[in-house]
Length: 63
Image (cartoon, rainbow, N blue to C red; front, top):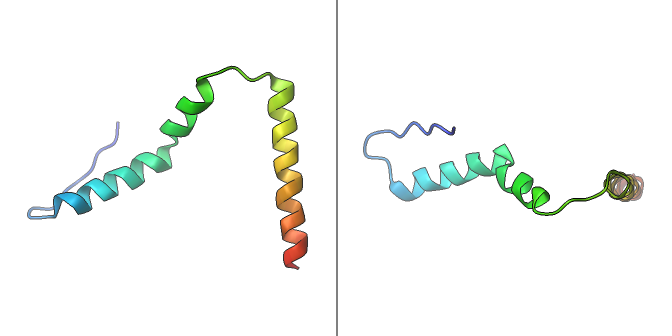
């Protein structure tokens, strides 16, 4: 459960923005999207490897 302490007289838009940011950081939406369909462990591992290779190539180009 997300608890948002709000100061008296604080703007509601600012409080909503804080809440949305905090909610995004928890990863709830990401997890829900991942659970919508089943991915085989081998496919999941392959995607992780490809992502790692891509990130590594970006880091090499940066150097």
